[in-house]
Amino acid sequence: MKRANLFHPRIFSDQEWAEGYYNRNAKNIGRVGERFVKLLKGSGFEKGRILDTGCGFGAVAIKIAQSFNDVEIVGIDLGKPLIKLGQSLAKKSGVADRIDFFEGDVQELDFETDSFDVVINTFMLHIVEYPVLMLNEIERVTRNHGRIMITDLRRIWLALVVKKLKTAFTLEEGKEVINKSSVRPGRYSRGPFWWDYMAGV
Picture 1 (cartoon, one colour):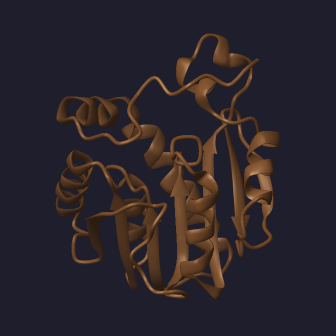
Picture 2 (cartoon, rainbow, N blue to C red):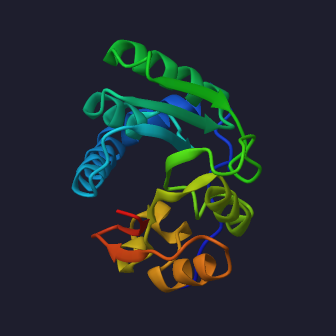
């Protein structure tokens, strides 16, 4: 099955679209946050500086902030409506003091090299125009003994009926993209509709 072009904009700059995206995906992305929390705890993580690249409405960052008191989380996204929604949700969740959301490009991160203990990336690899650039930037800003956590949709047979899955990479295609980048060695795994690349966890 051939990979399809995106049917939505790369940047969620439309307020109505951003709200619809939140309503359709809040629960599922929240579950990703819960999964990431378990992986971080299992790897011995307790505190540090975390970057969420392509944070969307902040569901993953919020789940992490709720589970770790001694963290500083920065979330970046180019979708202004999503950033505003993330700020509002963080405030309602009582973790706004541990999360800062900013407008920023995941393919050109405005942070110093080796500046984060954990860098996370959820459902972005198949959306960005230059995924290898994004991966190289993720590697650049992650500290030497830091953790990198990437998850993305996986194109499977269900893409015949679920439109968004048809725009995703297969696991094999995802591996090809990662192999072209400078990102550190990690391990692959997959779930029913997604695949992961984890380094240090």
